[in-house]
Length: 420
Image (tube, rainbow, N blue to C red; front, side, top):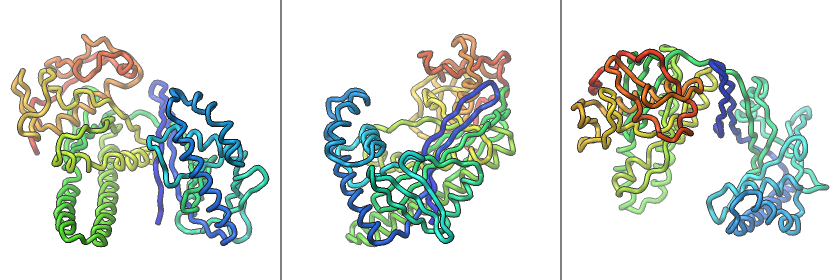
C-alpha cells in the first residue's frame, strides 16, 4: 500500500514568476531483526514518556523559546538521547494541542543524526538515537520504496527521517520549482453535497461553470443509513469494516474529482483558487453530521500535490464574505436565504445559486490578490455595471497585502447563474 502525504506548501512570488515549495511524507516498511526491534521499542517507549512529560511542562509558557529554556536541561537529565532528538521532542511537544500522546514520530536529521547507505541486497537508514549508539534499519523494497527512489531521482530531497511508534520509517521529502502564472482563474466552493467550479478571465468573463462530486454525497448518505442500522444492532466488527470502506471510497473519488479539476484548469489555462476554511462552531446534530464530514483537508492535500506536479498555481484565499457578496450590485447581505441552495440579494433582488456564486467570488478574490499590489477600496470595480468588490476585502490592510488594482473594469458577469 502506497502512503504518500502532502505536508506543507510555500510560495514566493516575483511578478509572474512563482517559486513554489512543497513537502510530502512516504512511509517505508522495515525488515529489522528481533534484536534491533527490541532496541527500537525501548527507545520509542522512553521517547513517548518524555514527550508526555514535556506536554505537562508546557503550561505557563507563552513563547517557544521560554518553553525550550525551561525543558532542555531537564530533558538532558531524564534521557540520554542525542541533542537533536531532544530538541525535536521539545519542538513537537510545543506544537501539539493535546495533553497526552500514545505514540509519536521521532525525527532524525541528515547528516548530523542520520544517514543512508546501500549494500548489494538492502537499503538501510541508520538512526543515531544515542551519542554512542546507531541502529541501521533495513528497508523493505516494495512499492513505497520504489516510489521513494523515483522521487529522489526526480529532484526531491530528503533531509529528515522519522521513526513511528509502529517502528516504521517515514521519509520527509521536499522540492522547489518555478511555476508561472496562468491567464485565467478557476474558483472552487466546497459544499457538503458537491464542489462548485467557476472559471473566469481577468476581464471577469465567465468561461465555464459546473458541479463535481455529487455521487460522493449520495453514497455517503447510504453509508450513514447503514451505519445507523448497524449501531442499533451493536455490530461493531461490521461498523469497523464499513468505516474503512467509506474512507477508501471518499479518498478514491476525491482523487477523481481533482483529476477532473486539473483537466478543466489546463483546458482553460487557469490557476486554481480555494477558500481557507476555519473550524465550524457546532450548530446542532444535523449540521455537525453534514458539514463536519466534508473532506476538505484531504481534498486540499490531494489538490496541492496535483497542482505542484502539473505546474498549476494554487491560491488559498480568505473566505471573508464569499457567501454574502452579490455579484450583481456589490452589496453584502446576510448570506443564504431560507432555501440554503439559493442566494437572494435584498438590495437588487438577484436570485442565484449559492454555491456557484461563492465559487465565482473565490475566483474574483484570487484575481484581486495577484502580483502584490494593494488597491484603494473605493476604486476596485467589476463588470459593466461597475459592481464594487469592496465587500470581498477586509478593511485590515494586512489581508490586502496581495491585492491588485485592475486598470480596466471587468466584464461579462451575468446577473443569474441558475442551477444548470
